[in-house]
Amino acid sequence: MNALRPRIAVNGRDYAWPDRPLAVICIDGSEPAYTEQAMAHGRMPWLSRQAKAGGTLTVGDCVIPSFTNPNNLSIVTGAPPAVHGICGNYFYDREAGKEVMMNDPAYLRAGSILAAFSRAGAKLAVVTAKDKLRRLLGHGMSGICFSSEQADRTTLAEHGIDNALAYVGRPLPSVYSAELSEFVFAAGVKLMRERRPDVMYLSTTDYIQHKHAPGTAEADAFYAMIDSYLAQLDALGCTVAATADHGMNGKTDTQGKPQVVYLQDRLDAWLGAGKARVILPITDPYVVHHGALGSFATIYLPAGSDVAGRIAGLDGVAECLSKAEACRRFQLPEDRMGDLVVVARRDMTLGTSQSKHDLSGLDVPLRSHGGVSEGRVPLIFNRPIALPKETVRNWDIFDLALNRVVAEETAHVHRATA
View 1: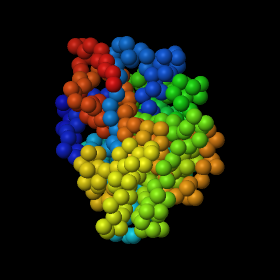
View 2: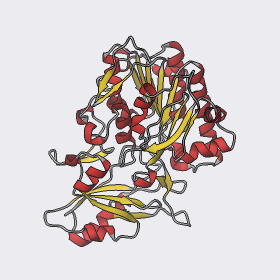
View 3: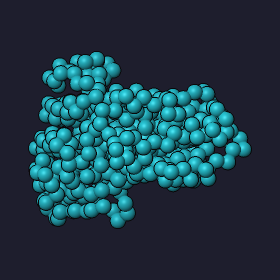
């Protein structure tokens, strides 16, 4: 570690200055089985070498609900949603009386590790697949910060780089494509080679994971691509630290039909139309590949309603928790959750009303996330890490990569399993 630099304090933790460039990668939707299967099939040679000598591979927990925004923000703040405030992609703003996307920095309640390092003089670079995350990740940060989705619109003033599309030298990818994620990696490698940021954060999209199960040819090809870019970052002298925001599971019956509990329809039947409000935090502008169906929901009830037992008894529901219980267990902000929190079974999803979910874009059997069953994620390092005895979380990754690297001259390979 760089003893000449002060440690950086963020949200109750101190972080050492990186002794070499740090590249933290969030591989969206990366159920641990994806890397395990790709390695078994010989498609991730770099990662296989890390598993045998020099690196650290383990499995940890992510934030529940296992969605993109709360987990990315937990990773870059080193804290749970109860601290940073982002508890979903979408929520009901009681003060405003409307349902809103939680992609505005105004909803953030804590600063990020990225912002703190940039204030201390570090060179920062952030590249994310979808623009919905860009403003949240880059809030308070000086440096380069842009998305693959809008790489053709970048300016030096707003994004720290003019015309990122021309800089990276790749075509603008479709938001529904594997190329959206590959653009992130290509940009990251070029930035590391030419701009040499001290800290870089890369965040991909889970388009492939929503469509293809671990071990399939399409999934293995995607992870082979990832492996090649991680190898390049390694060769450039980076500390490489990769994790995921959540896992992914199939949500269909034996015939390939989506399995859904339509909570709003049930509540309307029990309490009267519109008396209760179901919020699905998976909701965002990119619903073609999942139809806004995930495995976590929160419910706002009229005063005096007592339906928790009835919801818990529905086929496909794993748990129905009170707000207080859910917020305590999952470390969520109480003022941004409904009266009840519902978590689906591993093979099930939760919907509002059947008429409000357009599933016409599903051209393959539904795969989705959001519940506890998608809560296990990989943590991958190209250096030996002194892992703590307790379960690690994806939002420990900066702490692990900056504070817990074992000196190479005395290190042995650290390997751990779920």
